[in-house]
Image (cartoon, rainbow, N blue to C red; front, side, top):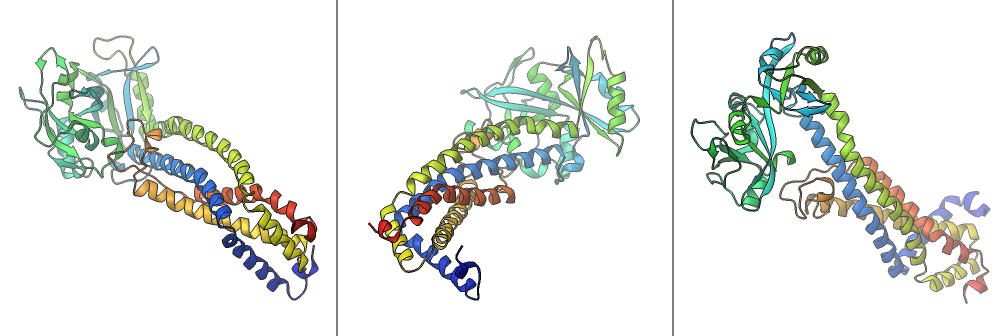
Length: 422
């Protein structure tokens, strides 16, 4: 190593001079610098967008199940109870509501119906959710549902048309407004029903509500022609008692009504939280695997790209060595140049990823992480650009550029000035 660079009173000024010339070199090779930054952007921008979407979806899902504090966390159930036969989830009889409500530690039990339906002439698929009318009425004055709906909440009227609240994305696809009607959803034993739209979820509500059809429990049971059954029961417990209540439900609730051989399957909030990484983690893992290959290819690409302007760089290095620069100084100058290119590429990647997610709403790539979203999502797609992926982007960009360009710089630096200037 040169003693003038790392030892002696002029070490700082020498380092500043080397850094200055390294920065100046970027402007002297605009084509090579531009192409190198473009190669970094092509790898990092999709990576940051994908990681931002994955984290955003995970955070919103955690809020939805109450694992992360949210405005409605206290209103969420502690246990989700369904029937179980041959180890598979099946509907549960409504007579179980009264039995579970009598257990010590249970505050209330709410039956729910969840099922898949098709809407309109194009048979657009949606998820229909039915809750008791009194639960929906209570939500009007609370913060659970009423604050995110334009229009009215559905009610059940004997002999009247079913009343529905549509998700914003569904309403857009069906071309529906409040007060509109849609073709019969299902033809049950009670005849055809033409539902009426009484409300629409706001576009800024949760993404989970964008493709949901909300109605009363009675209407859902009629539309599916499944009287006396519920998909699951939402059990609210006193603090510290969900585990005891869950154990008692599994032991004592079975063979409900005239059905035999049906037990109960109980899922708690913590169980739901543990299930979330299964789907999201699989897609995120596949996404990361693809970009591991992309990073390897990017190193080779930048290695080739570094050949742009190589003859001019060799002459520049030859001149520097002829004027007294040592090999370690030339390499340090090249390192500063490459690190600066990496920082520029990483910063631009973070900004472009934010623009893609915020202003373009995850155009095209959102559908990879969220089923049901098209090329251009009609809802606000959640995203979180966390510090860890951003720091990794900076580190990866610097490594990509440095590893891809260090060989060509070293090859020019170790030659004699006369050879380098040829």
